[in-house]
Image (cartoon, rainbow, N blue to C red):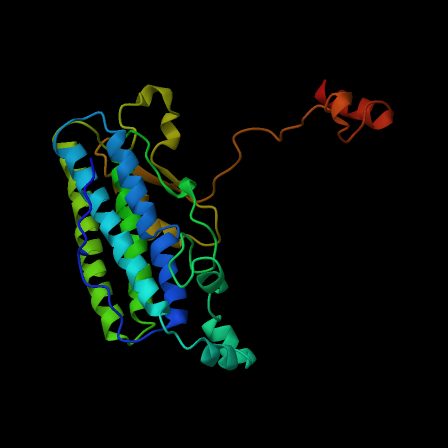
Length: 287
């Protein structure tokens, strides 16, 4: 069960109102890598976890903390909107260059949410459940989690540099620190999955290798001009999973002939239509 404490995990009080900054913070709330995404992602991963004990506990601990981060940022947005001098921004936005830079305020903050946060990103697009990943495979999920925390931390750092508001910066310092922790914890959890023998690289590690095309397993194909990619760790030497050796193919060639599809059935009215000399030519090719 959940229990809500009235206090915030960390203070979320701006130095002054700022409707444009509130719009920027919406990305950290309802964007693809915002706090709502990681909160829901970790909740559903936890509820889908079939391994009782430390892994499930870690996932749900983090999910619950992320809900606290949702509340912090939502509170900060609401406070930034309180008494924000809207007229000044409207006047500034009359200059095309200024309007392009500040992007204006979010009208829905005034019309829909009554100077409160909304479950949208900084462009006003609604948050979507398809942002989350909860596959039931802990290796695949933990890799996704580390990437989500990296993207979220990157965006928080960018917003940090967009403002000089000491209150907003102080909250973001906390968020950035927690994102550092969460990236590290998921990377540590990946290592522990391997040490415990539950999962390994690549995910899913229990898919039989005998059902893969062997020569394609650890091969880097050069599909661009030059061979700069051959200089990387990924082009030679042992693979991270310890089961193979990377190889580099500088000039890959097609391994199958050009596909030629038959005409669609008449009821689908495809091109070419049934009948005529062109159809016969297609049939001749196929035969």
